[in-house]
Image 1 (cartoon, rainbow, N blue to C red):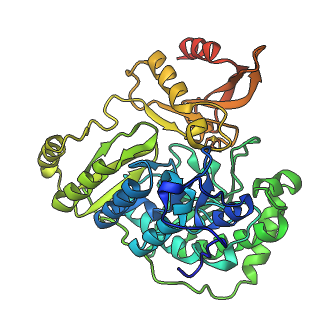
Image 2: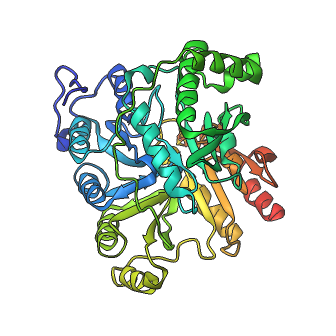
Amino acid sequence: MSQLQQEPGAKSGSSTDENSMQLSIEYIRELRILGVYPSAHRGYVMIRVKIPGGILRAEKARGLSLIADRFSTGELYITNRMSLQLHRVPQNDAMAVLEALEELGMTTRGACGGAVRGISVNTPLAEEAPVLRRFALRLHGFFSGNPDFEGLPKKIKIGLEAGYDKSRHLAQDIGLVYAGQRTGKSLYDIWLGGGLGRKPHEAFLYAEKVPEDEVLYQAQAVVNVYKRHVRSRRRLKLLIEEEGPDALSYYVRKERAALPVADEKPRPEDDGPSEFEDYISLYYFAGRLPADELRKLADLSELHCGGTIILIPDQGAALPVLKSDEKPRVLHALSEAGLDATGDNGRINTRICPGSHECRVGLSPTREVAEAVLDVLGQQKKGFTLAVSGCRNSCTQPQLADLGIVTLKPFRDQNGDSIPRFTLLQRNGSGFGKAVVENIGLEELLETVKSVI
Ligand code: SF4
């Protein structure tokens, strides 16, 4: 394996003796650029796999499911940026997993660390999605694994949207909103400097109706400006906070003017079905997708859906139905395989991060918190979205959910037990949700949820 050097003395492929040696914290940090992140559980790591455009081919899905069975918990976790995570990989097996993924043709490079993260298509079932996906793969091919765009102060998130419906462009470092076609070229509005975390910052509109080829240059200029002008461990939004949007626009335009012709590689992956008349969505609580289900999905997709699985925001998946009259047959096949295809039909959509179950900085057991809130909400609010984040990093975008929960620093009671505290956000209209109440315990949180819905 070319890019990954084993730490001296470390053994790989030995899940039975995972605690026999501890990899150094420094070494684990170095692994981040390869998508490896320390777990909340000593001796284990999390590995994040980029799924460009959210398109997963059946043969890769099968390979991933086997890796999850052999090296992880027999499950994969879908993130709300449509990547996949393997949890609790014994740290001494990390290199074996990376090698297996590389053999499958899958990319982890830049999925963590200071890099351009997985390019997300946040409206994967929209009519325009095939166009967005093709561009997402082009961007992925350009940025991913390119050393010129690594070693960034922190991360750059690029997201593509079919429109302004869910306002997700506001939370991206580079948000690209489809703005139609002109003389056969796709156009995008470019939004810059969005981000959540401790200090949420809404992106601003940098340029409108920019042709796709030019967007690629502008995105390159933004990443270069970020690398040069922003301090280590800070996001692009810091530059806007300190110098304002006009300064960022000025830097980017100047940088763009000096850029050489982009050195593009061919698009690296299949970009999924160019057209489908319908789809069937599948729901996975907290994104938990059992490996055996993934195998069944892969088989069904190959038989009926062109061999593609589409990962969708709110941590779900969908099978494209190429001709709508085939939908009953696909639904029947799913049911025969024991898979629940009720999708978002009457269900509350959820985005739930790993929290203290798996994440080293998680402050609450997010899945349990979400279950308690769902009990209060019932299941009647079709299309309603609940997002729960285990810390202020806000990975599940609680500011963009109808109800969002952010875990704060816990309070220690008289016995020294750690009691999580929460902020409840509610979103009405466009823009980020606002805090309804801050720094409260779980009981008060549940009471407040009852009172605001
Ligand atoms: S929000 Fe916090 S706890 Fe949740 S995954 Fe992100 S960093 Fe971890």
